[in-house]
Image 1: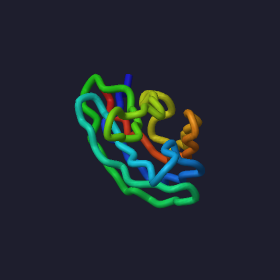
Image 2: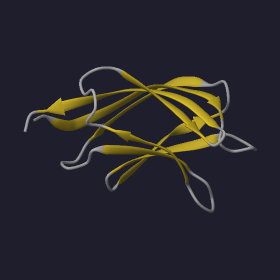
Image 3: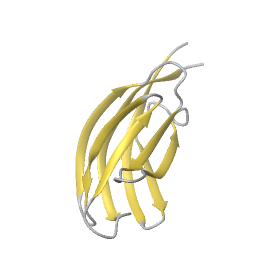
Image 4: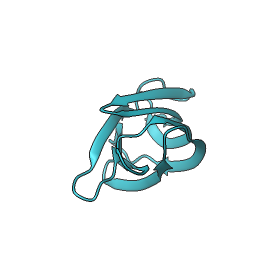
Length: 109
């Protein structure tokens, strides 16, 4: 059975932010790897162009909104679903509203 090997994050559209004041600072977490995604304000949309290798055994991407005191988990995405096709994941958590376009490239076991 194939497993996820590469994550490509593309266009991210912010419809509403999680923070009441200022932009959201989005961060991705793949296993033990933490990486910045970008700063977003309501109504912004841009192609982040991020490619991240996926370590063996990692099956989820967590998207956080980074805060000074405590990060807010916006979404956890199962990377084993629908690999090798373009996907759009909608985030509807708290006040945050995002559309995240991505593809997970698989590799055979």
